[in-house]
Length: 416
Image (tube, rainbow, N blue to C red; front, side, top):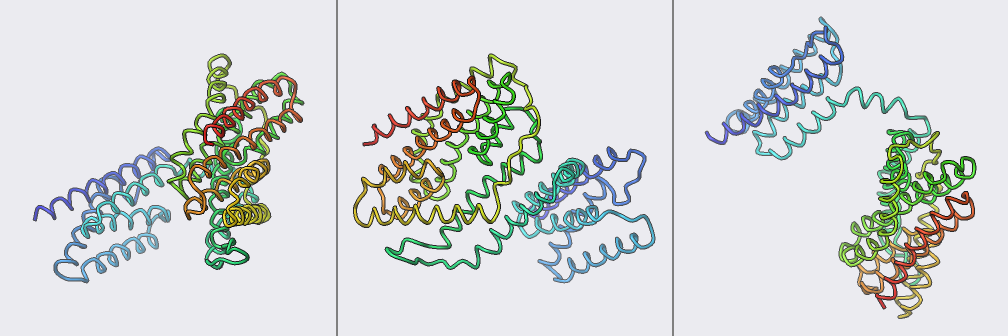
């Protein structure tokens, strides 16, 4: 009996929370409107009905819960046919509330709390979600569908076995790395589309760096030529975008090889110190709430061409790493890491993560290779800024990224 009382209390609380958010949302959107689907009291009762009926089905008659759901569903269908038409979200939240109570009765309390929390967030964010979705373009929708295709359609069809010389190519592993990197870039791109480029220069440059630090560097460097009076702001944005690359690499490596991420984090963290110092100096010494003028025209980082290009690059780097380790030519990994970092930091980082996880490369060598790749990548982006930016931007970015690369070079020397 105490277990049943706990179930009822949890069900009532979760139902009341959903009903509270539901009622507040409806009253805020239309204060004079009546909510035919109820509020706090109704949702609390529905959750209790779900809990009691599920408990009765488990302990007594198995048909109690199905019958209750059918009866309540028929009641709502009747009201839809003969009364005010209720929104689909209302009906869905009603059913979910009943099932939340059922989950509690089935002793799935964590699942019940999760379902209730998600429901509360979805109900509360009605207007916000509508506002966000209005900003999406057909290109954004196509990008989302491409991401679904890359993850849910292509990945299950890719064979999960090794091919080629030295068994160096695994299509499934390669495409999994494509999903990991493209997914992080896509999240940054979608966040940029949701918040807009005027959300503030710090947020804009951070999200731009998450989507593509190279594209963000190119964009802001070109802008500094057209608007030299804002060069210091654009230099700040470039530094932030390039610095985001370092924790992003640590995060990606941690997913594939946590044992490598632990020794790697202090060295990449040290590389970020010059940029963090510059960011703090800029933030305290200048107008901190300056919005980015105009829209940041970053292209969608996720498309099939880009994915295939990264897959080929990753496969080539992974093959060369496999050859070097098989032939015990570990010294060749460092030049490979440097040249790979000049084109794409993620390919060498993930290749080292997979190789160290498989035991082909020691953690010390893998750490040194990833750090050297980060050095090369910082130098490459500094070169882009110097070649395309204004004089003021060139000076700021060259100093910061130069110190970043120097810190990384010292770290590589310490790892010998």
